[in-house]
Image 1: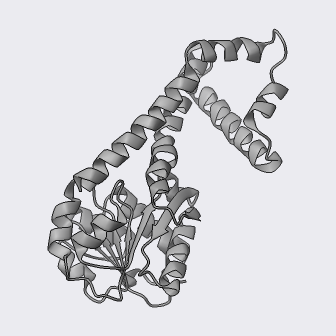
Image 2: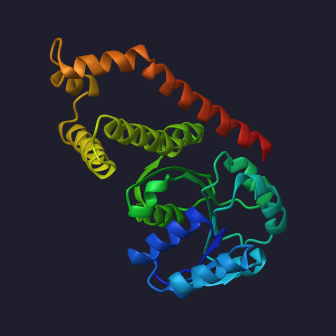
Length: 273
């Protein structure tokens, strides 16, 4: 629990709302009034007030007043203007946590004129407490602030600290963008199930449980995926026939290219900030 620390969220969009929901549902933040959210849309503010009883404002400067932790949850495209407004206005002992893709610690330090910066990259599974977040901290972040960061991120799921910030762009490509790739695969599997004669509900249930079971098996056995794949691939069998088509279609190459392209885009966004 973060005791009675005030937390300010700059940006009340989808990811911002997920963070609010998890912090309150896990009791990491004991009282909703300890959270203040700033969003330019008054309708969005009203929604967050009604849904979570948090305080809201449309003024970023008002939001950061008295905040022990400021979480930046805006789109990369508007970060420059947000930082211009907040530059030099955040108290020196306040922890700033960014969830903005591509925004480096150095660009955040310079843009905000603030030293204590944590850069994170969570994925959408934080909504159900199964997110994956890789994070890195500037040298000015204290041990207490590192502990506070871990507490917040653990409410969202698994957290992984890296001392090499370079890995965050990689994490963005594999873990954050990766959820979109997995959802597309799931969608394709469900559509294939419908094509062979299952109802959409049947195809979805079978697909989701097949994937969940496969992941759990790997987690529990810690075996290489190739070993597990070989266990279900009989010579001349059904799985072998299907795998042949996946390999012929270049599935491995397409996935690798998708991750590499996502990495490149993350790095491009960083250069734009």
